[in-house]
Amino acid sequence: MTTKSSLLILVNIAAAASMSGCGPQGSERDVIVPCGRHLRIPNYPPLAQSARVTGDVSVVFDVDSTGQPSRVTLQDATSKLLITVSEASLRDQVRGWRFLPECAGTTMRVRFSLRLDDEAAPAVFYDSPGVFTLTEQSPRLDTSTR
Image (cartoon, rainbow, N blue to C red; front, top):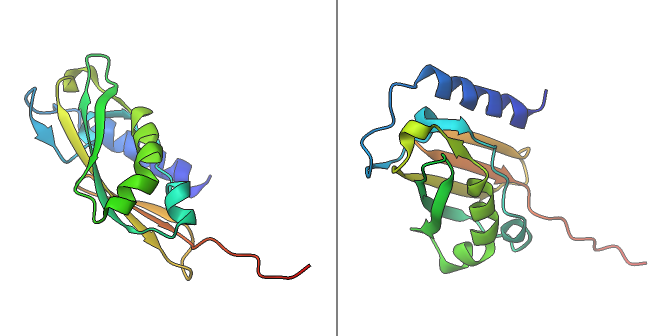
């Protein structure tokens, strides 16, 4: 079993174990797990990795009546470049998530912390509440001459 599938299973188990409610409608939540029905493990945005961009960014979205994210926006980035190189990828990833119907009308905020570390293996950590740390290695440049 891969690390990503293991984490997805843990997120689904945590969601099932804490279905005590998602908060009043119209409220903003940092903790997405209690409302989560299906949360795909996020990937480091490819363009951000290629450009060697790191930093933190929040993704804010509403949960609609069908449990799907809507009005997905990126906010509070450590740099404008981070939004430029990661917006499309993070938006698409969050739009694939599904939430419990009782969480409809809730505004969610999740923070992505993007880190490049050539000494570490690529990894994704869910640091509660509502923070994903995505670690990747810097892209390798082929410097050989042919």
